[in-house]
Length: 166
Image (cartoon, rainbow, N blue to C red):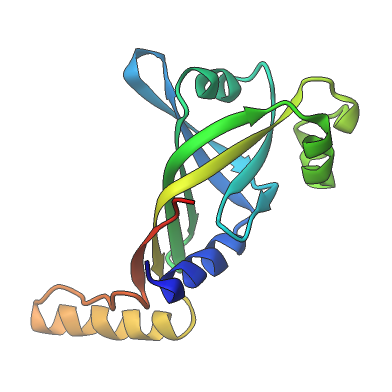
């Protein structure tokens, strides 16, 4: 496990405030929806707030496999595959609550159906085209166009895979 890549992965992930949570629905299909990230733990576990009677909570109760994708235009993208659980602990919900969630849960913390969704990642992957990487990426893209070659991406700096298992 490359500690530098894991740290970079966490930094990129922590910059996102929304993500697409993907769960397994009935009929062996995938169900994706945007979610506000309530918290990113140091070990890259993700937390979301949901309603216990939502499709996502029901799908996780049946099949815990979950995927999370975050993208910021062309500058960065992270992907996590792992497992999710529904946490019914009201103390946890209060700990994760923030006022931006009020738009989806008008009753706020008084909503008795609030639950936390905990995603524990097993594998992660990132693409970083921000800052100096953006300049490098633009250079590599232009070079590829001029030379009719494929653009080069620096492993570890611009792109990396991490193991998140605890």
